[in-house]
Image 1 (tube, rainbow over the protein chains, first blue to last red):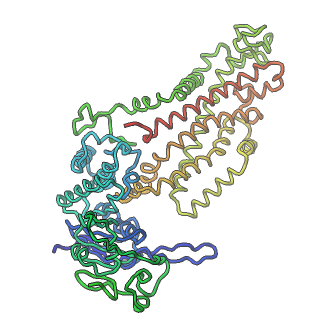
Image 2 (cartoon, rainbow over the protein chains, first blue to last red):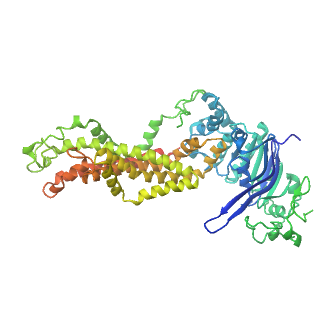
Image 3 (cartoon, rainbow over the protein chains, first blue to last red):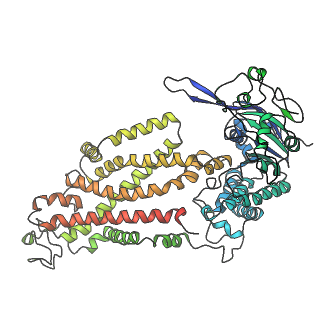
Length: 318
Length: 306
């Protein structure tokens, strides 16, 4: 396998919250100790329920926020704040909400050319425009869309524009923060197919963040399942989907709607509460909701073990 | 801002379909849909013409006194004369000439006050919106202090310190109006800053200045334009009020507020000396407010049809 274009080692992001006049500030561990490798032309999916730290991970990877701890390497060079300005153009992002991610005051042409204006000041205005027009065609929009405003487009078209903007700087890594979950199901597949085509053409590495497992099954190569800021299971897509080792992954998979009418409804219903991300429990964070919980789970935190399909569980499923 | 999208894009030859009408024509197309705004615009245009060419339009010198015709009623009333269509004031000066020339003072008050208050207010509000919490708090508390004074009273105090004149009145009114712009800009900036397009501009590498003035500011302009139009009229009103209180323009300047003040004692005897300056203020202010509304509608791309 080729060298990873981006790799993260024990990436963590903590927030200080509260800390009013009388309250002590508490530490919210949004992401703790996440490792991953991104390969060119491959898609890594990050899945998990709301509040599990998926979007925080995206914000760290796209250099919007600095990690509290851990290393992030891009092309073998460390991503630290001092390097951000000239590393920016290699990592771009597509947001979930296509209605908020385009500047309503700018025409599509201006939106697409802005990254070039900022980062490629040696380019002439004509070159920029030519490139923007080429990109419009590449993402499946028509040339006359160049001079229109975002509000004249549908959600799917806006998402295409957002993808075009992200690709203007020829990035190596594209972070897709739930790129299709705000779209109609019929549009979803069109946008997903576009993403797959673009990946093949440009050899892009995707970090695909989603809570929709059927979408993930369609596009990704590898998968990270996150729970309360931690990776609880990682591995190749086929292995994880075929035989999940962590109980949380199994519960998540069982919650995916199936298209077959006769399929067995063996859905696992989780009981119990999601622990507060501010409470630093000694044991496994999934213990309060797990149906296989034992005393060891409450006392000791499991490490992510096993290759290639790793799971953070004392009693992994077979 | 978007100089890159000229009407006829250069490198790729534009077909008739991709070319779009000029920016001004497009603006007029949307502005025209609001009848009140168009009416306001015409009145405002008349006001501007009076302000620019007042001395040439006025039949008499505004300060010339025709003693034998003091307090002459308007032409259509008994005893009136068509040589003084709107009558004369207690010193025998022609009302119409004074009103026409007076437009100039009101117009300059509006333009200068709005320019100073808006540019200062937008800048400070923008800084407050992007600043760290402590700086934001300091700025906003100072603005709260200014807002805590009744605005006319604060303007009065400032004029008392600076000395009564129209220039000082304008400075005082601008300072009094500034906090409104600061608050408005800051509130819009805070709301806009959360949106994804700002984050994506940041991911694309936009610096703080670009983020402030290219990305965020154009999206905050709609309420600021309305506020600008409204405070244009507020400025005229405040200047008139200061003039009425003897702290603005000094006689014999034909400023509308000052004219009202001079005519106070004749309210019961000669209605025209107070009614016409008052009407002039009312119509101008109303027209500007209508126009401001139309401006907002025409400048907001979200209200445009595709």
